[in-house]
Amino acid sequence: MTSLILRRADGILTVQDMGRPGHLAKGLSCGGAVDRQALIEAAALLGADRPLAGIEMAGAGGIFEVEQPMRIALTGAPMTATLDGAPLRWHASHQVAPGQKLLIGGVQAGSYGYLTPAGGMASDEWLDSRAAHLSIGIFSPLAPGELPTGQDTCPDMPPQVIDPAPRFNGGTVRIIDGPQTGLFDDEVLSAFFSTEFTRSDRGNRQGVRFDADRGFASEHASGLASDLIGPGDLQMTGDGVPFVLLAECQTIGGYPRLGTIIPADLPIAAQAAPGMKLRFRRITLDEADRLWQTETGQLRAALARCRPLVRDPAMMTDLLGFQLISGVTAGNELEDQ
Image (cartoon, rainbow, N blue to C red):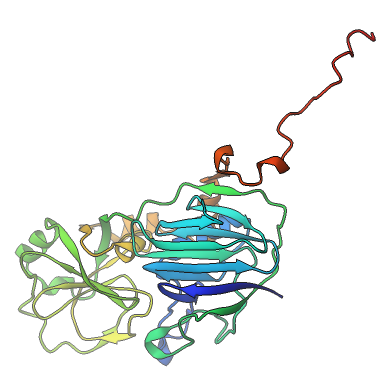
């Protein structure tokens, strides 16, 4: 067992993986990473065959060290990062050596950044997952100390960089109709899909609110029985304000659901920082089916966006340790022929 040392936590740091699917009947939502695409991209960078448990960093990171050489991937919302003062590229994998100080600062865009060790986090499991589910008290935010990690299965893999799926500056998300879409008048739906919303400062791992100049209420939605809900559902409050449900949302709710964001676009809403602009676009179920990808398919697509990380010699503190010239000769070989 290896370990990553957390010296200081500046944001809300939790261990997250792909969550606990299959327990909805017991009242437990899936949970896991708010931005699942970030763990898939980390797996691609690290050469893993499946997403690994990593550290989700809300707002800011902290200071980290290692006791043994360790590869890490930095994905999700771009954050400032330095290793012994030298800038590190985000959306890339890097090698960290004992004695070096990894400093991860605040977000530059988006909301949630991820640090994933090549062996994955190896903290305690509950129901086959290491994910903290803060709203119901499963595990807790990380505190300074040693954090166990798994064994790196590809220690000699060179650093990689990935072109991330765009999702850190708002944009347009596609939604399919929900169980109560028909309760909203055509005029309300038309106005909703032509409106630009602003991400409110109200939001957490359960869901985020999006504001507009008007509400989008339904006169036919009062007295609804509570129904099953899940991540991506677009709940409309009584005054017609949309909330996008995220990883730690409750399992049932009585607010009408105008629609559901497709999984491919949910990270756009999840990563939207306060003040970011968002629009909703209605698509058919057939379109959504064509856009759906398995986890394996998503990882394959992420691998195709990876390439070797070319380091800037000006930023290489270990430059003298590299052989930069090949084919060196004594200079008199031609004379000896």
